Length: 564
Image (cartoon, rainbow, N blue to C red; front, side):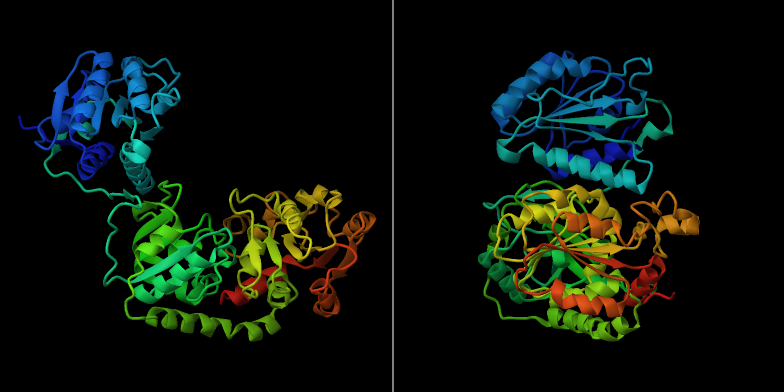
């Protein structure tokens, strides 16, 4: 009988990627759980397969083979206690920095602890036996396929990283004898390969490719990086797609949220931006899922941490280096070409030109406030935005390029925006610091208002609609499921004084703040100059604006070109 490859997709992904990562040496120990893997490779001429009954010896044999050949070596074992016997050799590999892939085949992890024979817990490896320990799950969906592909690439690329070292990969098999494990596939189905580059390596060519840079939340930029990115855009006919938390101030910037969230594009399935290569820098974007509407054939991630962070789910390369080092490599001095930027800017400016007219139609709301306040924020100020609706709506506002904008998008939780703003304000008493916060986030972080270090240069805008509007917008999943029944529990309606006109006033004034409030556009305009006065006042300021969730929906739908 001719035997080929298993039908189990996680095994196919691993075998395909072993080849693409140039890993061919395997020392196999006997067993049933790993027979699917071993049976799939033993007749593949690419692999060099050796046998060793004792896993203790197998691990040390792998160390010796790796030392002598200067190549990674795979050791494969079955379930039960087999993997425990790898520990001595794995410890040797760890301290000797040898690239040994410890491949432990296992039954599904859900069986752990349920008295199933030969099932042991392999989820936690001793610290000095491997640099990374992850799992290749069974593949039953596209989500499983993605996770399995990423984990396999992560494990295989880790073997040679930072001088090399052992990696543990737990390979799940259904442990049953049926068509799911039949060794009948003559052709090995492909999988996406993710490769890691270091500064010393030769970089892939971008010639003839349409390129964009996507920037997530980012620390303050240095002048050299800005210069390199501008030059890159001119050499590669590229653009910089970002929101306010990117803090990018250079040329060729496109504030993509205003364009990418337009329903007239989305309803027709027209990609706002379509490129061959998307270069991803920075951290978590405040725009949640909308960046995935950028159409790209592949993504290159550039980060000093060198980690595979596959947000766009089409990563091909990870460049483990500083952004300066990456963009410096592409300073070729080609003839300047900015046609892609001019085309993208024209689309952006078309939507931006509609903002004044849309703003006049908007009711008093967070969206309207952003349109009025953002352009009026004094130069060189720092702004902190609370997450979700406030962050979303203020990404439609236009700040001066000298203003730094941040948001607690790292954890993306309701807590912390006001405290982060107060902490930032301790760095410089000569500039203004603004926090824009929805009511749930404001009250969650209320105690920091009583901190004795709060300076006179702190100003806080509280947009109070009495609940979590994030769950009330028309296209929110919770609202579509529950309609107005979303109010009492999901949207947390009715807490914190039910939009009391006295609660925040009394609290803030008793703590020494100047309190402002508004419930309409006219009342707001009377207070605006005080709130954005570029001169540091004699007290910190809390400005409370009372809005209605229905008006919030109307305003958000207007700016996103949605029907009400």
